[in-house]
Image (cartoon, rainbow, N blue to C red):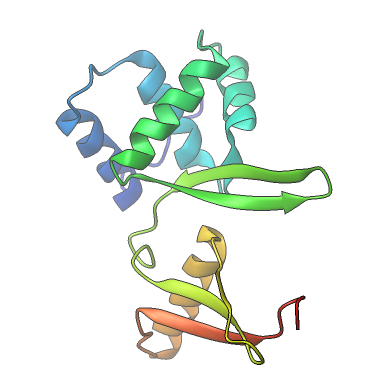
Length: 150
């Protein structure tokens, strides 16, 4: 199994979550956290499950969903929506220290309706570019757009 980079803030947060969790530290929880840490993009529960199987971990898909939910409840994992031609699917990533409190919203320029943009990768990229260029971002960013109803 490929090991995560042990010097990262995300890895340290995972280790702390596991230590502070009221749950038993299990091989499955540790292996699932390691899979998430290896990802560059958010990943579906099914893809996490496939990675665990490839890593010779004996875990069920139901356990993957349960552990992801526990990690989300603890604030370690961010669950986003990914829209495809097949429908909407939940995708998961380690919560970014940089942008997890910030809200990105589309706001219709006609009716004012708002829609949250739940994309951890995009949020992280925006925060990184802002920091690199010396900009301070507000906690809520509105992006003007036009909703399909207008």
